[in-house]
Amino acid sequence: MGSRSSHAARIPDVDSIRRETGFSQASLLRLYHRFRALDWNEKGYLSRVDLQQIGALAVNPLGDRIIDSFFPDGSLHLDFPGFVRVLARFRPVDDEDNRNRDPKEPEPLNSRMNKLRFAFQLYDLDRDGKISRQEMLQVLRLMVGVQVTEEQLESIADRTVQEADEDGDGAVSFLEFAKSLEKMNIEQKMSIRILK
Image 1 (tube, rainbow, N blue to C red):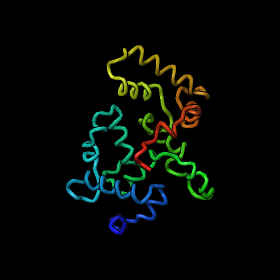
Image 2: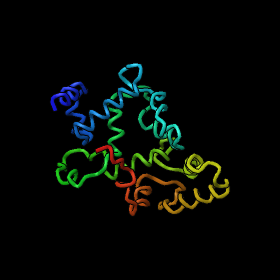
Image 3: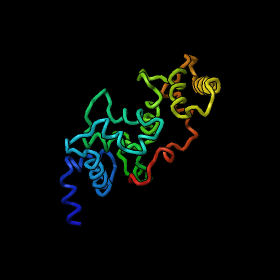
Image 4: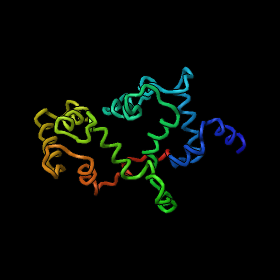
């Protein structure tokens, strides 16, 4: 146990990161080792190119959109705390998280609403706070490739936007997006079990 603690001591601001993300010390240590492995030339940060080397992202049709989420506001470098903050959204939700939560504290990064915000930004390509029919169509094209005709894709995009668009503005706001997914178990679908 002594060696684990000494390794954790090398993680900058480990206690602050643990409180913010909800990750255990052991999980943070594993993620730190992963971060350092991705930072193969020891720059102390990751770039888009570093993340593009992850096989699962390279073959994921939304891989570029997911990588974009690690670099908010067009930043070029990703430090360890930023890396862990994004991954925290995929941490499974524990009942204990909700029981021990101080209502004055910010909402946990892995909360249902934060998971929904993450999913929403994958579709909101121009970051205007709405998902237009065109944005929905672009994401659908990425996801299904040539397996579906353009006409079928357009029909799916039209129907999806139409069903979620409650105010009739031809686009889906975050609140409309969240409401359209209220029956879906986002907490389960957007969780990676290894991230406890």
